[in-house]
Image 1 (tube, one colour):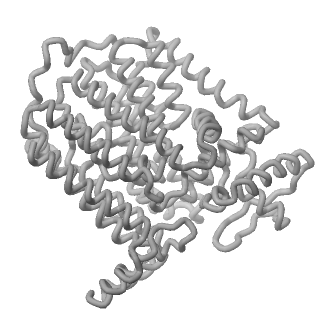
Image 2 (cartoon, rainbow, N blue to C red):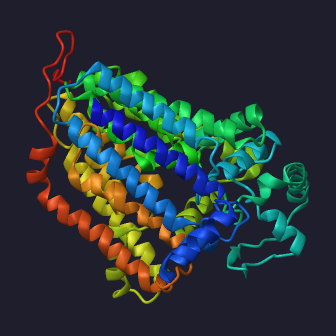
Image 3 (cartoon, one colour):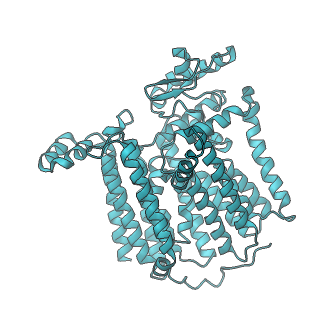
Length: 525
């Protein structure tokens, strides 16, 4: 109990420090610190006066200080979790974990989003839908292209604009968007991916429209909803761990995860909603509620397309589940259909959004990057090698998925383990492996605390270094980032080899299940 309480207090103080860093320290404080510090540290200290203001150049933001605090939060989470795995579950300890988890989120909710502007884009897409404009048709920068007369692909100030001519119908819709921009100038100016079409699926667009209706341009209101579902994920994880007879204190690896805290409470990424729905579908599948589970899983897939790969894990391809498969397919197609026919958008805008986002998103794609480099020796251009690597990784994932789901599973724990394997492989093969994407893997670490993945939870945050084009003394990212790739993924795969030994230390025998629990019921084949 003392370790949990002490760790929670330290983590809470670190969250307060993050809020101070995001807002910026008083200039006179920073000047006094810089005067007393070695010359090598002064550039990093000077950044502390800037904070993470949306209109600030990212090179001037205190990313180094942010990563230091994130590393300290990870150490607190890891050390506290290590101690809890050695002890039986305690109701007092669980309440303490949950109480601090709530406190951390409340402390980070009002903090300026750090290196993220996704919440602003979500609200803009929602407002576009409410204004009667298909969110897939026009990227926010379409207003800039019309006003500047950009009718062909053009690069301006490092941003690439597709450019195209406008019909009379386009002009009328763009007039509505211009009115939205003029009525919400601060929201529009803070959109950093304005030159990219929307890539969020239909379920997401519906949530964005509802949030815009309820909260207007308030990111705090939107983030509050995100945190509500984030807390719901913790509740579902506790129920799942209890059902499987596993230590419920393992929920700390999600509840106190610095990646989860920053992704949801601070940045307001909407993924907590489909993540909550996905865990609900797992619970329904374990209770043999095929139709309800397939409906819920299809809904989650409409929020995060990668979740559709979980269908063969939860509902095997058999005559028994064939109708559930067809039902999921019809739901997905039916959700996209209105946006395809709305204002004659067709399918191209939706595919453009997916393509542009994947090509522009900063990430540390480990396996994908290695495959792309190999493909670069075969094909002449980088674009061709990227496409070939995407196809190859897709086929590799398909083969893995078939092999993992071809045999029936004997119990619920095996289902969860296979679901973990599918989510992990999809993340590893993705061209956009980043902290925001890792939140789909972290819930599984509460049941299977593998040291390699717990370590990756820390090192993957090196992604934030790519927001700097120059870091004093380090040189350009073209020289630094390859070494970051090697450090992040080299350490991960090395520890993967040691997992069987390290897990014996971390993963203690589970506590005895309660009389009314059913830890390993047989699943239908």
